[in-house]
Amino acid sequence: MPTKKTGLYANIHAKQERIKHGSGEKMRKPGAKGAPTAESFAQSEKTAKKPPRTKTHRATRSKRAKSRHRAR
View 1: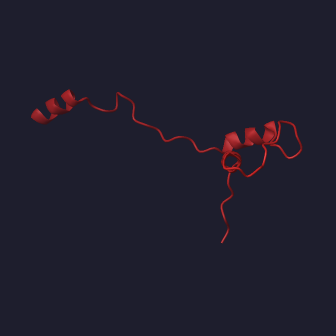
View 2 (view 1 turned 120 degrees about the vertical axis):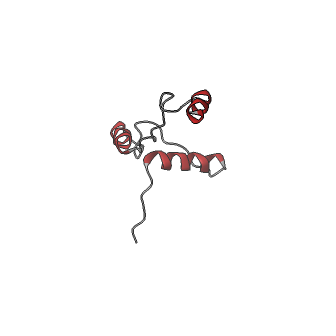
View 3 (view 1 turned 90 degrees about the vertical axis):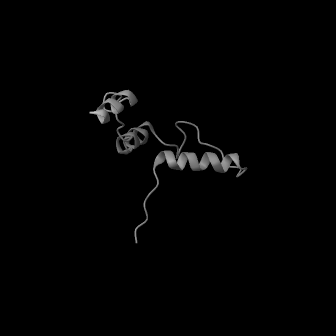
């Protein structure tokens, strides 16, 4: 069964958590060998999940409008 790959930001966050808990690791500097490039950040941005759309204030009725609607 294939496992789902974690994304760039998930990997960065996981490493920051390990460092915070005393793993002794260090984050690589931008441009260092093995550090994520600007291209990999751009690719990650393209594949990121979009946040779910929420209803706008116009789509929901106010309490007053709801009560008037029920009264009819």
